[in-house]
Amino acid sequence: MSEQILSVNSAAIGFDDVEPLIEGVELRLREGEIVGLTGRSGIGKTTLIRTCAGLIPPLSGSISFAGAPLGDKARGEVGLIPQRLGLIQHQTVGYNVLMGALPRAKWYQSAFSLPSAEMRESTRNAVEAVGLQDKILTSVNSLSGGQQRRVAIARAMVQSPKLVLADECLGELDAETAKGIINLLRDLANDGTSILIVDHNPVRARTFCDRVLQLRGKRLVELGDEEQDATPALPVLRRPEQ
Ligand SMILES: Nc1ncnc2c1ncn2[C@@H]1O[C@H](COP(=O)(O)OP(=O)(O)O)[C@@H](O)[C@H]1O
Ligand SMILES: [Mg+2]
Image (cartoon, rainbow, N blue to C red; front, side, top):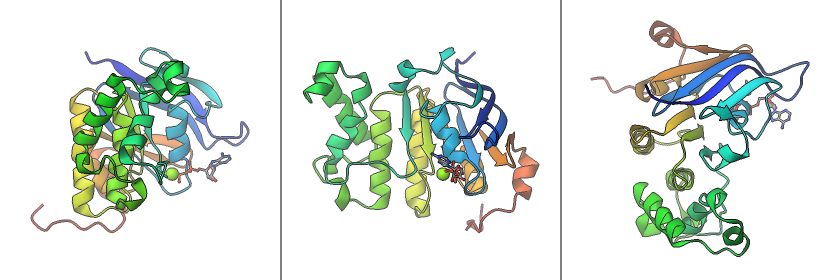
């Protein structure tokens, strides 16, 4: 049976004990699974993602990662693609992706900016995997929105994470670019990485996720097929033959 990577157990999520954003969260992710997370703006999707990344402590309950309590050790094994990508705009693609390898670097490599041959090699591989090998020495601020998202994905991939947390990494992309990114995520999942991805569009999420969860009120619920069909979706362009 595939390994359980992330397990959130009866957790309350948010910033205020008295008024949590989400209550009673039960969430399990298995190896190689892609799970979608939807819900209206401001409901707590980013907060949940950041909590799963270990950046915000749960108000109550517990979170475990690969069978152990989520802690500093997990940092190097969780690749976060934040909603605002957090790239260093004036630096090159290669530099930004290399930064993703740092949680695994030895202290002296970080302190003196001495990437190992292995870190440089995995940077090149990740940049190639997202199809930006020609741009490795290009400054991020001269790339398109879709290309910048690819850089953020490569930065998450470079550490060979067990879990990728992707916050709206498909937002405002044209259909073709979004498809390219979805294929990248699929490839990652086929290699065993678990992916939790926020997509405000539940119809699209269903096309590439194994399961889709929704934040509704203060609860995290799993959408069944019928329910997903009934969800009033944002206007979505469907190809007539599909
Ligand atoms: N650091 C913070 N401290 C207090 N409240 C916050 C903080 N970050 C976000 N919030 C609030 O938490 C709520 C959920 O935000 P967020 O998780 O970003 O929602 P979503 O990603 O679903 O749009 C919002 O009301 C937001 O203002
Ligand atoms: Mg958000």
